[in-house]
Length: 92
Image 1: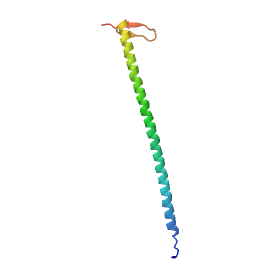
Image 2: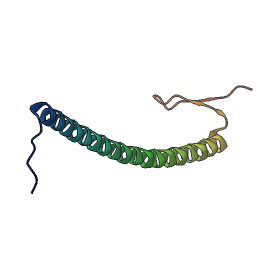
Image 3: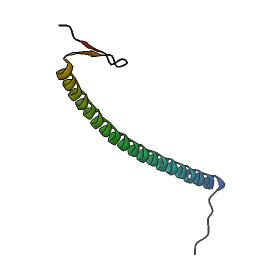
Image 4: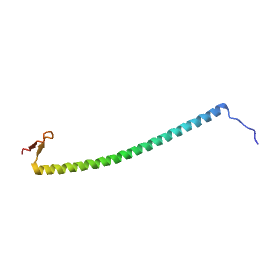
């Protein structure tokens, strides 16, 4: 067996510094990956919520269009005061 050799204090300090820096960066990288994953999940949820809201908006537009057609057929073109319910026919 060969003669044992020891690293100097400076060499050991440098090895430990690099090891600690590596662990820190690895931990930081892992945390960033977790944050990216969470952000992607939040984005996917927002995208789904946007789709649902968009579909609801389109449905409301269709309902409004049908109501306007029904009321125009019944009362003719005009405006309504939503507070009093009074209808004012359009002047041509």
